[in-house]
Image (cartoon, rainbow, N blue to C red):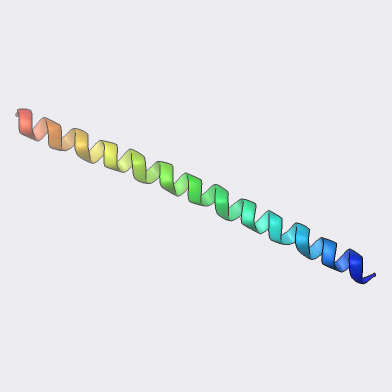
Length: 48
């Protein structure tokens, strides 16, 4: 019985880590998009 609980706990932690990793990756890509947007605006201001 205890082995099953340990295994379930392990699966749950993996699931949570996966979710964390996914949201982190999403956040990073959003940050990259924002930075690209900012630098594009800065370039336009330099030209104009």
